[in-house]
Length: 596
Ligand code: ASP
Image 1 (spheres, rainbow, N blue to C red):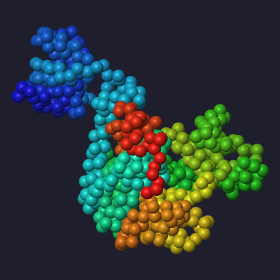
Image 2: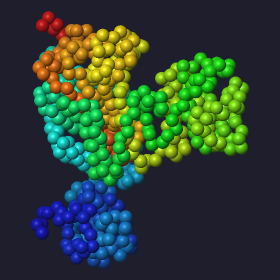
Image 3: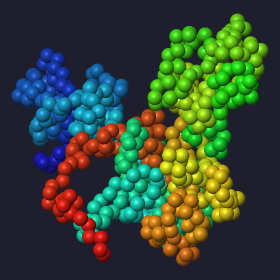
Image 4: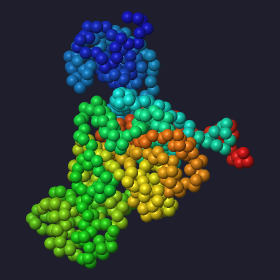
Protein backbone atom coordinates (compact mmCIF):
# COMPACT_ATOMS: atom_id res chain seq x y z
CA UNK A 1 0.00 0.00 0.00
CA UNK A 2 1.40 3.38 -0.97
CA UNK A 3 2.68 5.31 2.02
CA UNK A 4 0.83 8.48 1.12
CA UNK A 5 -2.50 6.86 0.37
CA UNK A 6 -5.38 8.45 2.27
CA UNK A 7 -7.72 5.55 2.13
CA UNK A 8 -8.14 2.05 0.82
CA UNK A 9 -11.84 2.03 1.74
CA UNK A 10 -14.39 4.52 2.93
CA UNK A 11 -16.01 4.61 6.36
CA UNK A 12 -19.26 3.00 5.23
CA UNK A 13 -17.81 0.10 3.33
CA UNK A 14 -16.27 -2.54 5.55
CA UNK A 15 -18.15 -5.77 6.38
CA UNK A 16 -17.43 -9.27 7.74
CA UNK A 17 -15.90 -10.17 4.35
CA UNK A 18 -13.08 -7.77 5.06
CA UNK A 19 -12.10 -9.29 8.40
CA UNK A 20 -8.36 -9.86 8.55
CA UNK A 21 -7.53 -7.25 5.89
CA UNK A 22 -5.31 -4.29 6.52
CA UNK A 23 -7.08 -1.07 5.58
CA UNK A 24 -6.48 2.66 5.58
CA UNK A 25 -9.33 5.03 6.35
CA UNK A 26 -9.58 8.82 6.58
CA UNK A 27 -12.34 10.90 8.06
CA UNK A 28 -13.60 12.98 10.95
CA UNK A 29 -13.54 11.85 14.56
CA UNK A 30 -17.02 11.65 16.00
CA UNK A 31 -17.07 10.31 19.56
CA UNK A 32 -14.48 8.51 21.60
CA UNK A 33 -15.20 6.27 24.55
CA UNK A 34 -12.71 4.92 27.04
CA UNK A 35 -13.19 1.59 28.70
CA UNK A 36 -10.23 0.83 30.92
CA UNK A 37 -7.50 -0.31 28.59
CA UNK A 38 -9.58 0.18 25.44
CA UNK A 39 -10.46 3.35 23.56
CA UNK A 40 -13.15 3.33 20.91
CA UNK A 41 -13.35 6.08 18.34
CA UNK A 42 -16.02 6.55 15.68
CA UNK A 43 -14.59 7.68 12.36
CA UNK A 44 -17.03 9.34 9.97
CA UNK A 45 -17.07 10.32 6.31
CA UNK A 46 -19.82 10.82 3.73
CA UNK A 47 -20.36 7.08 3.44
CA UNK A 48 -20.78 6.12 7.06
CA UNK A 49 -19.15 5.51 10.40
CA UNK A 50 -16.57 2.88 11.29
CA UNK A 51 -15.53 2.01 14.82
CA UNK A 52 -11.82 2.18 15.59
CA UNK A 53 -10.33 0.45 18.61
CA UNK A 54 -7.07 1.21 20.39
CA UNK A 55 -5.62 -1.11 22.99
CA UNK A 56 -3.51 0.36 25.80
CA UNK A 57 -1.68 -2.89 26.24
CA UNK A 58 -0.73 -3.23 22.57
CA UNK A 59 0.36 0.33 21.97
CA UNK A 60 0.14 2.80 24.85
CA UNK A 61 1.40 5.73 22.74
CA UNK A 62 -1.15 5.25 20.00
CA UNK A 63 -3.89 4.82 22.56
CA UNK A 64 -3.11 7.98 24.47
CA UNK A 65 -2.83 9.88 21.15
CA UNK A 66 -6.34 8.66 20.26
CA UNK A 67 -7.68 9.75 23.62
CA UNK A 68 -6.62 13.32 22.91
CA UNK A 69 -8.78 13.71 19.81
CA UNK A 70 -11.64 16.11 20.12
CA UNK A 71 -14.69 16.15 17.90
CA UNK A 72 -14.19 16.69 14.17
CA UNK A 73 -10.41 16.26 13.98
CA UNK A 74 -9.40 14.93 10.56
CA UNK A 75 -7.33 11.77 10.84
CA UNK A 76 -5.97 8.89 8.81
CA UNK A 77 -5.57 5.46 10.30
CA UNK A 78 -4.26 2.11 9.21
CA UNK A 79 -5.26 -1.07 10.94
CA UNK A 80 -6.72 -4.54 10.72
CA UNK A 81 -10.43 -5.28 10.28
CA UNK A 82 -11.72 -7.59 13.01
CA UNK A 83 -15.09 -8.93 14.07
CA UNK A 84 -16.75 -6.97 16.85
CA UNK A 85 -17.71 -8.80 19.96
CA UNK A 86 -20.46 -6.32 20.65
CA UNK A 87 -22.19 -5.84 17.28
CA UNK A 88 -24.28 -2.78 16.36
CA UNK A 89 -27.18 -3.89 14.15
CA UNK A 90 -28.16 -0.25 13.44
CA UNK A 91 -25.01 0.48 11.52
CA UNK A 92 -24.05 -1.11 8.17
CA UNK A 93 -20.47 -1.43 9.41
CA UNK A 94 -21.66 -2.55 12.85
CA UNK A 95 -20.26 -6.07 12.65
CA UNK A 96 -16.63 -5.02 12.41
CA UNK A 97 -14.10 -2.65 13.90
CA UNK A 98 -10.54 -1.62 13.07
CA UNK A 99 -7.68 -2.47 15.36
CA UNK A 100 -5.54 0.56 14.67
CA UNK A 101 -1.81 0.18 14.10
CA UNK A 102 -0.91 3.65 12.86
CA UNK A 103 -2.48 7.02 13.09
CA UNK A 104 -1.96 10.52 11.60
CA UNK A 105 -3.64 13.71 12.55
CA UNK A 106 -4.30 15.41 9.19
CA UNK A 107 -5.97 18.50 10.59
CA UNK A 108 -7.11 19.62 13.99
CA UNK A 109 -10.64 21.00 14.47
CA UNK A 110 -11.88 23.66 16.83
CA UNK A 111 -14.72 22.52 19.07
CA UNK A 112 -17.74 22.69 16.73
CA UNK A 113 -20.49 25.15 17.76
CA UNK A 114 -23.12 22.40 17.71
CA UNK A 115 -23.09 18.63 17.82
CA UNK A 116 -22.79 16.96 14.48
CA UNK A 117 -25.26 14.16 14.99
CA UNK A 118 -28.74 13.35 13.75
CA UNK A 119 -30.29 15.25 16.65
CA UNK A 120 -28.38 18.47 16.85
CA UNK A 121 -28.49 21.18 19.49
CA UNK A 122 -27.78 23.88 16.86
CA UNK A 123 -30.41 26.59 16.24
CA UNK A 124 -31.27 27.57 12.66
CA UNK A 125 -29.01 30.57 12.29
CA UNK A 126 -26.03 28.81 13.82
CA UNK A 127 -26.52 25.83 11.53
CA UNK A 128 -26.72 28.18 8.53
CA UNK A 129 -23.61 30.08 9.57
CA UNK A 130 -21.65 26.84 9.86
CA UNK A 131 -23.47 25.12 7.03
CA UNK A 132 -20.34 23.06 6.22
CA UNK A 133 -20.70 21.46 9.65
CA UNK A 134 -24.45 21.08 9.26
CA UNK A 135 -23.98 19.28 5.94
CA UNK A 136 -21.74 16.76 7.73
CA UNK A 137 -24.89 15.72 9.63
CA UNK A 138 -26.67 12.71 8.23
CA UNK A 139 -30.03 14.41 7.84
CA UNK A 140 -28.80 17.23 5.62
CA UNK A 141 -26.29 15.07 3.78
CA UNK A 142 -29.00 12.54 2.91
CA UNK A 143 -31.24 15.34 1.65
CA UNK A 144 -28.53 16.58 -0.68
CA UNK A 145 -27.92 13.07 -1.93
CA UNK A 146 -31.65 12.68 -2.52
CA UNK A 147 -31.73 15.96 -4.39
CA UNK A 148 -28.86 14.92 -6.61
CA UNK A 149 -30.57 11.63 -7.46
CA UNK A 150 -33.84 13.41 -8.17
CA UNK A 151 -32.11 15.73 -10.62
CA UNK A 152 -30.35 12.85 -12.33
CA UNK A 153 -33.54 10.76 -12.60
CA UNK A 154 -35.41 13.77 -13.96
CA UNK A 155 -32.79 14.25 -16.64
CA UNK A 156 -32.82 10.54 -17.51
CA UNK A 157 -36.60 10.41 -17.81
CA UNK A 158 -36.96 13.57 -19.85
CA UNK A 159 -34.05 12.55 -22.07
CA UNK A 160 -35.82 9.26 -22.77
CA UNK A 161 -38.91 11.24 -23.72
CA UNK A 162 -36.90 13.25 -26.23
CA UNK A 163 -36.51 16.47 -24.23
CA UNK A 164 -33.40 18.60 -24.73
CA UNK A 165 -31.84 20.56 -21.87
CA UNK A 166 -31.08 24.10 -22.94
CA UNK A 167 -29.53 26.72 -20.69
CA UNK A 168 -31.11 30.15 -20.81
CA UNK A 169 -29.45 33.34 -19.59
CA UNK A 170 -29.49 34.60 -16.02
CA UNK A 171 -28.90 38.24 -16.85
CA UNK A 172 -32.12 39.09 -18.60
CA UNK A 173 -34.98 41.54 -18.51
CA UNK A 174 -38.08 41.24 -16.38
CA UNK A 175 -40.23 38.14 -16.87
CA UNK A 176 -43.41 38.75 -14.96
CA UNK A 177 -44.41 35.84 -12.74
CA UNK A 178 -46.07 38.12 -10.23
CA UNK A 179 -43.13 38.83 -7.93
CA UNK A 180 -40.54 41.59 -7.74
CA UNK A 181 -37.37 41.27 -9.78
CA UNK A 182 -33.84 41.16 -8.48
CA UNK A 183 -31.91 43.77 -10.39
CA UNK A 184 -28.27 43.77 -11.52
CA UNK A 185 -27.00 47.23 -12.49
CA UNK A 186 -24.99 47.31 -15.68
CA UNK A 187 -21.52 48.86 -15.50
CA UNK A 188 -21.22 49.19 -19.24
CA UNK A 189 -24.66 50.68 -19.75
CA UNK A 190 -25.07 53.58 -17.32
CA UNK A 191 -28.49 53.80 -15.73
CA UNK A 192 -29.52 50.40 -17.06
CA UNK A 193 -29.94 47.11 -15.28
CA UNK A 194 -30.53 43.46 -15.95
CA UNK A 195 -33.22 41.54 -14.10
CA UNK A 196 -32.64 38.02 -12.85
CA UNK A 197 -35.22 35.61 -14.27
CA UNK A 198 -38.29 34.87 -12.17
CA UNK A 199 -38.47 31.95 -14.59
CA UNK A 200 -37.17 31.26 -18.09
CA UNK A 201 -40.75 31.62 -19.38
CA UNK A 202 -40.17 33.83 -22.42
CA UNK A 203 -36.97 32.00 -23.38
CA UNK A 204 -38.61 28.61 -23.39
CA UNK A 205 -41.39 29.95 -25.57
CA UNK A 206 -38.79 31.42 -27.93
CA UNK A 207 -37.13 27.98 -28.01
CA UNK A 208 -40.43 26.53 -29.23
CA UNK A 209 -40.56 29.13 -31.98
CA UNK A 210 -36.95 28.11 -32.68
CA UNK A 211 -38.20 24.57 -33.31
CA UNK A 212 -36.67 22.81 -30.30
CA UNK A 213 -39.98 21.00 -29.79
CA UNK A 214 -39.32 19.59 -26.31
CA UNK A 215 -37.23 21.64 -23.88
CA UNK A 216 -36.37 21.24 -20.25
CA UNK A 217 -33.93 22.79 -17.82
CA UNK A 218 -33.21 22.34 -14.14
CA UNK A 219 -32.79 25.99 -13.48
CA UNK A 220 -32.41 28.64 -10.80
CA UNK A 221 -35.16 31.25 -10.61
CA UNK A 222 -35.15 34.43 -8.56
CA UNK A 223 -38.11 36.17 -6.94
CA UNK A 224 -37.86 39.04 -4.51
CA UNK A 225 -40.77 38.09 -2.26
CA UNK A 226 -41.39 37.84 1.45
CA UNK A 227 -40.00 34.56 2.64
CA UNK A 228 -41.70 31.60 4.26
CA UNK A 229 -40.66 28.08 5.17
CA UNK A 230 -41.44 26.88 1.67
CA UNK A 231 -39.98 29.87 -0.17
CA UNK A 232 -36.49 31.07 -0.97
CA UNK A 233 -35.44 34.12 -3.01
CA UNK A 234 -33.55 31.79 -5.31
CA UNK A 235 -35.02 28.39 -5.96
CA UNK A 236 -34.87 25.69 -8.59
CA UNK A 237 -37.42 24.63 -11.15
CA UNK A 238 -37.71 21.72 -13.50
CA UNK A 239 -38.81 23.94 -16.34
CA UNK A 240 -40.38 22.33 -19.41
CA UNK A 241 -42.02 23.29 -22.68
CA UNK A 242 -43.46 21.32 -25.60
CA UNK A 243 -44.74 22.18 -29.07
CA UNK A 244 -47.77 20.85 -30.93
CA UNK A 245 -49.36 19.52 -27.78
CA UNK A 246 -52.76 19.59 -26.18
CA UNK A 247 -53.24 20.20 -22.49
CA UNK A 248 -53.99 16.55 -21.90
CA UNK A 249 -50.77 15.46 -23.59
CA UNK A 250 -48.84 17.76 -21.28
CA UNK A 251 -50.63 16.45 -18.21
CA UNK A 252 -49.95 12.86 -19.26
CA UNK A 253 -46.27 13.54 -19.94
CA UNK A 254 -45.67 15.12 -16.54
CA UNK A 255 -47.86 12.71 -14.67
CA UNK A 256 -45.50 10.13 -16.18
CA UNK A 257 -42.45 12.01 -14.96
CA UNK A 258 -43.88 12.42 -11.45
CA UNK A 259 -44.93 8.81 -11.21
CA UNK A 260 -41.54 7.60 -12.39
CA UNK A 261 -39.69 9.82 -9.90
CA UNK A 262 -41.81 8.59 -6.99
CA UNK A 263 -41.27 5.00 -8.03
CA UNK A 264 -37.53 5.29 -8.52
CA UNK A 265 -36.73 7.43 -5.50
CA UNK A 266 -39.38 6.50 -2.93
CA UNK A 267 -40.59 3.14 -4.24
CA UNK A 268 -44.12 4.56 -4.18
CA UNK A 269 -46.69 3.68 -6.84
CA UNK A 270 -48.76 6.80 -7.21
CA UNK A 271 -52.41 6.37 -8.14
CA UNK A 272 -53.80 7.85 -11.35
CA UNK A 273 -53.87 11.63 -10.90
CA UNK A 274 -57.45 12.84 -10.65
CA UNK A 275 -58.38 16.16 -12.23
CA UNK A 276 -60.53 18.79 -10.59
CA UNK A 277 -61.55 22.20 -11.86
CA UNK A 278 -60.45 25.27 -9.96
CA UNK A 279 -64.11 26.09 -9.19
CA UNK A 280 -64.74 22.65 -7.80
CA UNK A 281 -61.58 22.73 -5.67
CA UNK A 282 -62.67 26.03 -4.20
CA UNK A 283 -66.21 24.99 -3.47
CA UNK A 284 -65.26 21.58 -2.06
CA UNK A 285 -62.09 22.50 -0.17
CA UNK A 286 -61.88 26.30 -0.20
CA UNK A 287 -58.44 26.08 -1.77
CA UNK A 288 -56.88 25.69 -5.21
CA UNK A 289 -54.34 23.34 -3.62
CA UNK A 290 -56.43 21.06 -1.46
CA UNK A 291 -54.91 18.34 0.67
CA UNK A 292 -56.97 15.42 -0.56
CA UNK A 293 -55.49 12.88 1.86
CA UNK A 294 -58.62 13.36 3.92
CA UNK A 295 -62.21 14.14 3.09
CA UNK A 296 -64.08 16.66 5.28
CA UNK A 297 -65.49 18.48 2.27
CA UNK A 298 -67.35 21.78 2.44
CA UNK A 299 -71.12 21.87 2.42
CA UNK A 300 -72.90 25.14 1.71
CA UNK A 301 -75.89 26.00 3.87
CA UNK A 302 -77.16 29.32 2.51
CA UNK A 303 -80.56 27.93 1.59
CA UNK A 304 -81.15 26.07 4.83
CA UNK A 305 -80.10 28.97 7.04
CA UNK A 306 -81.67 32.00 5.39
CA UNK A 307 -84.63 33.78 6.94
CA UNK A 308 -84.78 32.60 10.54
CA UNK A 309 -83.69 35.82 12.17
CA UNK A 310 -80.01 35.01 12.56
CA UNK A 311 -78.59 38.15 10.99
CA UNK A 312 -75.03 36.89 10.68
CA UNK A 313 -76.14 34.12 8.33
CA UNK A 314 -78.88 36.14 6.66
CA UNK A 315 -76.44 38.84 5.62
CA UNK A 316 -73.64 36.51 4.59
CA UNK A 317 -72.70 35.93 0.98
CA UNK A 318 -71.74 32.38 1.96
CA UNK A 319 -72.64 30.06 4.84
CA UNK A 320 -70.43 26.99 4.67
CA UNK A 321 -69.26 24.28 7.01
CA UNK A 322 -67.41 21.04 7.56
CA UNK A 323 -68.33 17.98 9.56
CA UNK A 324 -65.80 16.78 12.14
CA UNK A 325 -66.65 13.12 12.58
CA UNK A 326 -66.89 11.85 16.12
CA UNK A 327 -65.86 15.17 17.65
CA UNK A 328 -69.09 16.23 19.39
CA UNK A 329 -67.99 14.82 22.74
CA UNK A 330 -64.37 15.89 22.29
CA UNK A 331 -65.07 19.61 22.27
CA UNK A 332 -66.20 21.32 25.48
CA UNK A 333 -67.48 24.90 25.39
CA UNK A 334 -64.00 25.99 26.35
CA UNK A 335 -62.46 24.04 23.48
CA UNK A 336 -64.88 25.68 21.06
CA UNK A 337 -63.96 29.04 22.49
CA UNK A 338 -60.28 28.30 21.96
CA UNK A 339 -60.93 27.13 18.43
CA UNK A 340 -62.86 30.33 17.78
CA UNK A 341 -59.97 32.44 19.08
CA UNK A 342 -57.61 30.45 16.86
CA UNK A 343 -59.83 31.35 13.87
CA UNK A 344 -59.98 34.98 14.92
CA UNK A 345 -56.21 35.46 14.88
CA UNK A 346 -55.20 38.04 12.28
CA UNK A 347 -53.54 35.32 10.16
CA UNK A 348 -57.00 33.81 9.56
CA UNK A 349 -59.35 36.63 10.46
CA UNK A 350 -62.68 34.81 10.90
CA UNK A 351 -65.36 36.75 12.74
CA UNK A 352 -66.86 33.84 14.62
CA UNK A 353 -67.63 30.14 14.54
CA UNK A 354 -70.98 28.39 14.71
CA UNK A 355 -71.12 24.78 15.87
CA UNK A 356 -73.72 22.05 15.94
CA UNK A 357 -73.04 18.97 18.05
CA UNK A 358 -75.05 15.81 17.44
CA UNK A 359 -74.72 13.93 20.71
CA UNK A 360 -74.49 10.16 20.83
CA UNK A 361 -77.61 10.28 22.99
CA UNK A 362 -79.57 12.00 20.22
CA UNK A 363 -79.28 15.47 21.76
CA UNK A 364 -78.43 18.49 19.65
CA UNK A 365 -76.41 21.42 20.94
CA UNK A 366 -75.65 24.47 18.90
CA UNK A 367 -74.44 28.03 19.34
CA UNK A 368 -77.40 29.09 17.15
CA UNK A 369 -80.01 26.87 18.84
CA UNK A 370 -82.00 30.00 19.61
CA UNK A 371 -82.66 30.64 15.95
CA UNK A 372 -83.00 27.17 14.51
CA UNK A 373 -85.16 24.28 15.71
CA UNK A 374 -83.70 20.81 16.30
CA UNK A 375 -85.56 19.73 13.22
CA UNK A 376 -83.77 22.35 11.14
CA UNK A 377 -80.43 21.49 12.69
CA UNK A 378 -81.08 17.87 11.81
CA UNK A 379 -81.70 18.93 8.22
CA UNK A 380 -78.27 20.59 8.17
CA UNK A 381 -76.77 17.39 9.53
CA UNK A 382 -78.30 15.45 6.66
CA UNK A 383 -76.59 17.75 4.17
CA UNK A 384 -73.26 16.67 5.73
CA UNK A 385 -74.19 13.04 6.22
CA UNK A 386 -73.59 13.65 9.91
CA UNK A 387 -74.07 10.79 12.38
CA UNK A 388 -74.56 10.87 16.16
CA UNK A 389 -71.29 12.00 17.73
CA UNK A 390 -70.38 14.34 14.86
CA UNK A 391 -69.91 18.07 15.04
CA UNK A 392 -70.51 20.71 12.37
CA UNK A 393 -68.25 23.76 12.23
CA UNK A 394 -69.76 26.58 10.21
CA UNK A 395 -68.37 29.90 9.03
CA UNK A 396 -70.07 32.69 7.14
CA UNK A 397 -69.30 35.95 5.43
CA UNK A 398 -67.84 37.14 2.16
CA UNK A 399 -67.36 34.22 -0.20
CA UNK A 400 -63.61 34.16 -0.91
CA UNK A 401 -62.53 35.02 2.61
CA UNK A 402 -64.90 32.55 4.24
CA UNK A 403 -63.69 29.74 2.01
CA UNK A 404 -60.09 30.51 2.83
CA UNK A 405 -60.83 30.58 6.55
CA UNK A 406 -62.73 27.33 6.45
CA UNK A 407 -59.94 25.78 4.45
CA UNK A 408 -57.53 26.63 7.28
CA UNK A 409 -59.96 25.19 9.80
CA UNK A 410 -60.33 22.02 7.74
CA UNK A 411 -56.55 21.51 7.70
CA UNK A 412 -56.33 22.21 11.42
CA UNK A 413 -59.11 19.74 12.20
CA UNK A 414 -57.53 17.19 9.87
CA UNK A 415 -54.28 17.54 11.85
CA UNK A 416 -55.96 17.43 15.24
CA UNK A 417 -58.05 14.42 14.34
CA UNK A 418 -55.02 12.55 12.97
CA UNK A 419 -56.60 12.24 9.51
CA UNK A 420 -53.48 13.29 7.61
CA UNK A 421 -51.34 10.25 6.92
CA UNK A 422 -47.73 11.36 6.32
CA UNK A 423 -47.03 8.16 4.41
CA UNK A 424 -49.68 8.75 1.77
CA UNK A 425 -49.15 10.79 -1.39
CA UNK A 426 -52.26 12.19 -3.01
CA UNK A 427 -51.63 13.91 -6.32
CA UNK A 428 -54.22 16.07 -8.02
CA UNK A 429 -54.35 18.16 -11.18
CA UNK A 430 -56.26 21.38 -10.64
CA UNK A 431 -57.35 22.68 -14.05
CA UNK A 432 -59.32 25.52 -15.67
CA UNK A 433 -58.07 28.41 -13.57
CA UNK A 434 -59.53 31.85 -14.23
CA UNK A 435 -57.44 33.70 -16.82
CA UNK A 436 -57.58 37.08 -15.10
CA UNK A 437 -58.02 38.21 -11.55
CA UNK A 438 -59.55 41.60 -10.79
CA UNK A 439 -57.63 43.47 -8.13
CA UNK A 440 -59.89 45.93 -6.31
CA UNK A 441 -57.03 47.91 -4.84
CA UNK A 442 -55.10 48.66 -8.01
CA UNK A 443 -58.27 48.46 -10.11
CA UNK A 444 -56.51 46.27 -12.59
CA UNK A 445 -56.59 42.77 -13.92
CA UNK A 446 -53.70 40.51 -13.01
CA UNK A 447 -52.82 37.35 -14.86
CA UNK A 448 -53.70 34.48 -12.57
CA UNK A 449 -50.86 32.36 -13.97
CA UNK A 450 -48.78 34.69 -16.13
CA UNK A 451 -49.44 36.96 -19.11
CA UNK A 452 -48.51 34.30 -21.68
CA UNK A 453 -51.22 31.86 -20.66
CA UNK A 454 -53.89 31.14 -23.26
CA UNK A 455 -57.60 31.29 -22.57
CA UNK A 456 -59.48 28.08 -23.15
CA UNK A 457 -60.22 27.72 -26.85
CA UNK A 458 -63.95 28.26 -26.29
CA UNK A 459 -63.25 31.55 -24.46
CA UNK A 460 -60.94 33.03 -27.09
CA UNK A 461 -63.62 34.94 -29.00
CA UNK A 462 -65.09 36.35 -25.79
CA UNK A 463 -61.63 37.48 -24.75
CA UNK A 464 -61.08 39.38 -28.00
CA UNK A 465 -64.40 41.17 -27.99
CA UNK A 466 -66.02 40.91 -24.55
CA UNK A 467 -66.64 43.66 -22.02
CA UNK A 468 -65.11 44.12 -18.59
CA UNK A 469 -67.45 41.70 -16.80
CA UNK A 470 -66.88 39.04 -19.45
CA UNK A 471 -63.16 39.17 -18.74
CA UNK A 472 -63.77 38.05 -15.16
CA UNK A 473 -65.37 34.84 -16.36
CA UNK A 474 -62.67 33.78 -18.84
CA UNK A 475 -61.04 30.42 -18.12
CA UNK A 476 -57.38 29.75 -18.79
CA UNK A 477 -55.89 26.59 -20.19
CA UNK A 478 -53.77 26.47 -17.03
CA UNK A 479 -53.14 23.69 -14.54
CA UNK A 480 -51.36 23.04 -11.27
CA UNK A 481 -50.03 19.80 -9.91
CA UNK A 482 -50.85 19.52 -6.23
CA UNK A 483 -49.56 16.80 -3.93
CA UNK A 484 -50.79 16.60 -0.35
CA UNK A 485 -51.92 20.21 -0.40
CA UNK A 486 -48.66 21.56 -1.80
CA UNK A 487 -48.42 23.16 -5.21
CA UNK A 488 -45.66 21.18 -6.87
CA UNK A 489 -45.93 22.57 -10.35
CA UNK A 490 -47.93 24.77 -12.63
CA UNK A 491 -48.17 25.56 -16.28
CA UNK A 492 -50.39 26.36 -19.18
CA UNK A 493 -51.04 26.27 -22.88
CA UNK A 494 -49.57 29.51 -24.18
CA UNK A 495 -50.85 32.18 -26.46
CA UNK A 496 -49.01 31.83 -29.79
CA UNK A 497 -50.84 34.46 -31.73
CA UNK A 498 -49.62 38.03 -31.74
CA UNK A 499 -53.07 39.64 -31.67
CA UNK A 500 -54.31 37.58 -28.78
CA UNK A 501 -51.10 38.25 -26.86
CA UNK A 502 -51.44 41.98 -27.52
CA UNK A 503 -55.04 41.85 -26.32
CA UNK A 504 -53.88 40.13 -23.12
CA UNK A 505 -51.24 42.80 -22.46
CA UNK A 506 -53.92 45.37 -23.11
CA UNK A 507 -56.27 43.78 -20.55
CA UNK A 508 -53.42 43.63 -18.05
CA UNK A 509 -53.00 47.37 -18.32
CA UNK A 510 -49.84 47.55 -20.45
CA UNK A 511 -49.87 50.39 -22.95
CA UNK A 512 -48.90 49.47 -26.51
CA UNK A 513 -45.51 51.10 -25.93
CA UNK A 514 -44.89 49.30 -22.64
CA UNK A 515 -45.83 45.95 -24.14
CA UNK A 516 -43.57 46.60 -27.10
CA UNK A 517 -40.74 47.80 -24.89
CA UNK A 518 -40.88 44.82 -22.53
CA UNK A 519 -42.02 41.99 -24.77
CA UNK A 520 -41.46 43.23 -28.30
CA UNK A 521 -38.99 40.39 -28.88
CA UNK A 522 -41.68 37.79 -28.11
CA UNK A 523 -44.43 39.55 -30.04
CA UNK A 524 -42.02 39.86 -32.95
CA UNK A 525 -41.12 36.17 -32.76
CA UNK A 526 -44.82 35.27 -32.85
CA UNK A 527 -44.84 36.66 -36.40
CA UNK A 528 -42.34 34.09 -37.65
CA UNK A 529 -44.34 30.91 -37.37
CA UNK A 530 -44.91 30.28 -33.66
CA UNK A 531 -46.16 26.73 -33.14
CA UNK A 532 -48.94 25.99 -30.65
CA UNK A 533 -47.11 25.21 -27.42
CA UNK A 534 -47.43 24.81 -23.68
CA UNK A 535 -45.49 23.67 -20.67
CA UNK A 536 -45.05 23.45 -16.99
CA UNK A 537 -42.53 24.11 -14.25
CA UNK A 538 -42.07 22.03 -11.12
CA UNK A 539 -40.71 23.54 -7.93
CA UNK A 540 -37.71 21.27 -7.56
CA UNK A 541 -36.94 22.13 -3.93
CA UNK A 542 -40.58 21.63 -2.96
CA UNK A 543 -40.75 18.36 -4.80
CA UNK A 544 -37.75 17.17 -2.76
CA UNK A 545 -39.47 18.24 0.46
CA UNK A 546 -42.87 16.72 -0.37
CA UNK A 547 -41.34 13.43 -1.48
CA UNK A 548 -39.71 13.29 1.95
CA UNK A 549 -42.90 14.28 3.77
CA UNK A 550 -41.60 17.59 5.11
CA UNK A 551 -42.68 21.21 4.75
CA UNK A 552 -39.47 23.17 4.77
CA UNK A 553 -37.46 23.32 1.57
CA UNK A 554 -34.43 24.75 3.34
CA UNK A 555 -32.84 21.49 4.29
CA UNK A 556 -32.88 20.36 0.67
CA UNK A 557 -30.84 23.37 -0.41
CA UNK A 558 -27.11 23.22 0.25
CA UNK A 559 -26.75 26.90 1.07
CA UNK A 560 -30.16 28.41 1.78
CA UNK A 561 -31.01 31.91 2.90
CA UNK A 562 -32.71 32.75 6.17
CA UNK A 563 -36.04 34.53 6.68
CA UNK A 564 -34.43 37.89 6.02
CA UNK A 565 -33.05 36.65 2.73
CA UNK A 566 -29.53 36.48 4.21
CA UNK A 567 -26.89 33.93 3.54
CA UNK A 568 -25.55 33.61 7.08
CA UNK A 569 -22.40 31.79 6.05
CA UNK A 570 -20.98 34.26 3.57
CA UNK A 571 -22.88 37.14 5.20
CA UNK A 572 -24.66 38.38 2.14
CA UNK A 573 -26.12 40.73 1.06
CA UNK A 574 -23.39 43.12 2.08
CA UNK A 575 -22.53 46.77 1.65
CA UNK A 576 -20.71 47.52 -1.58
CA UNK A 577 -17.76 49.83 -1.83
CA UNK A 578 -17.81 53.43 -3.01
CA UNK A 579 -15.76 52.40 -6.02
CA UNK A 580 -18.25 49.74 -7.00
CA UNK A 581 -21.13 52.15 -6.55
CA UNK A 582 -19.36 54.59 -8.78
CA UNK A 583 -18.49 52.00 -11.38
CA UNK A 584 -22.10 50.91 -11.47
CA UNK A 585 -23.28 54.50 -11.73
CA UNK A 586 -25.23 54.16 -8.50
CA UNK A 587 -23.71 56.97 -6.48
CA UNK A 588 -26.34 59.42 -5.33
CA UNK A 589 -24.44 62.20 -7.10
CA UNK A 590 -24.92 60.33 -10.34
CA UNK A 591 -27.77 61.38 -12.59
CA UNK A 592 -28.39 59.17 -15.57
CA UNK A 593 -27.98 60.71 -18.96
CA UNK A 594 -31.47 60.63 -20.42
CA UNK A 595 -30.64 62.55 -23.57
CA UNK A 596 -29.48 59.39 -25.38
N1 ASP B 1 -43.13 29.92 -15.81
C1 ASP B 1 -44.16 29.34 -14.99
C2 ASP B 1 -43.79 29.49 -13.52
O1 ASP B 1 -42.66 29.74 -13.18
C3 ASP B 1 -44.40 27.91 -15.28
C4 ASP B 1 -44.96 27.66 -16.63
O2 ASP B 1 -45.97 28.28 -16.99
O3 ASP B 1 -44.41 26.81 -17.34
O4 ASP B 1 -44.63 29.29 -12.67
